[in-house]
Image (cartoon, rainbow, N blue to C red; front, side, top):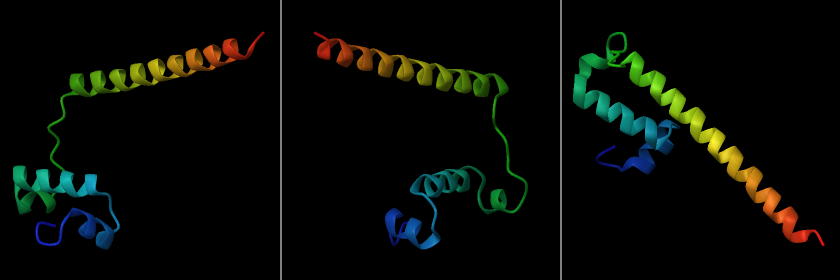
Length: 79
């Protein structure tokens, strides 16, 4: 990846560049042994819960924004 670049490597391996960066970070944290055994979980359950809640709230806000835009467009078109 460092020699050929992220784009070329991701195409060759048929994986996303995000996955490559995730693997690189994992390697930096755990070395080669991190890929030889079960995945190491540093996840904090409370943090994961908050991330999920944050994602759900963002989706709700996006949905409400879409509804508002559609309503505004319809109001512009009505006589």
